[in-house]
Length: 119
Image: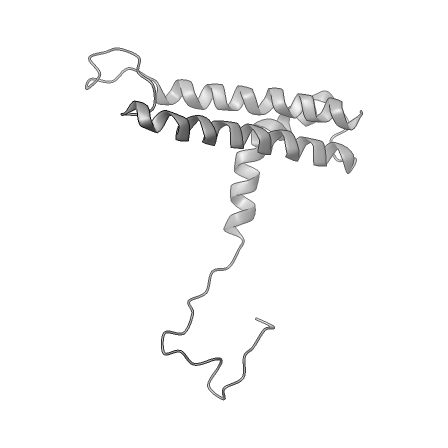
């Protein structure tokens, strides 16, 4: 499968995932009087939500294209699945990043004054 075909199937998969996500956020509630409503409270929040949806869609397209280029996604279904799963895969990758607290006393390193970059 070509890179462009993998990217297009990833785009379709991520668009389906985002459509399902948006429809889940638009469900009628008791506070909306049983009406369907957009997932933002104020119209000024709409561009932020749209940007987040577009960003996740582009991430799905990119992940499927990378999987296709690397030979991991060889069928349309595999590329579609990478597009659907992209937000979860990327979130799990960022969960693996270890965040450490910086020293608050202004000391440049460890107890003996040396900085340990191998951690």
